[in-house]
Image (cartoon, rainbow, N blue to C red):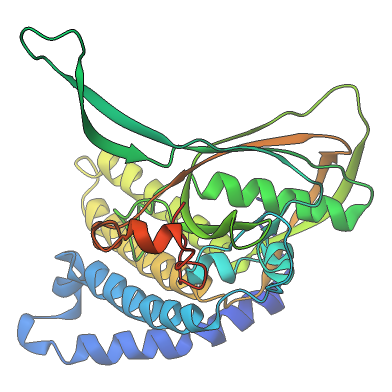
Length: 334
């Protein structure tokens, strides 16, 4: 992603947007005077934890608000659709805006979908019998494979193609690093399509995604934007990493250099976490991502795995399932 140093207005807006968060952090740290100076507090690593805690709390609040909002798709729309992940960084991403506007990732052309259900049985070895008895083990809804054509005719459709690829890539990655939810697995999303008796709010995770950039078709260029906060977070991370490297290489030979580089790294880390928080909340404006070219003709291959919690599996009723009693459920059994 290109970081546009000329977008000083956007950078100024970002600083203004996170000023309240920075003041809250300052007030919080001043209340910990009994723990020592702010420098001691920062160098002990507790500043990072405080920032992460603030980000996680704000993220949980925004995530809860988003959960009540749901997707804006028409219930009568029977096209195959993957919901947008219910996390603020996904819903506020400028790259994913075409999907948010559409109410999720809707496959524009009718895809080919393969579904399967299996029941596992184990043979019970019985002495002196001509027939083997079978003991039921478990059932498995199996994976769902979607192969969808994705043709592009103009720059608007090209942006949708980019958003779809970026979204499916993101759904195969866990939260890590300085993420407020670091350590959590990739998000669970919902699959809908073809009406209530086929796919109705089926909870799934993306286990694989692939597409091809064919040499035998034309390509369309379009301008893509990214998050200014994310760009600043990346720059701050780079500065902090460079300071650590310099301090590690020369800190022992140059008097006082280690303390200086540690201070730079701490400040850069704080700036990066504040920018990361702003980005997760959709604040800070955008920055140019340059021109991206996409193929006019391609195909997506997506493999989904239905996932159910222990509680939902325990409360499953076959009688209710057979009679269609789960049609209006918040999530769908298949």
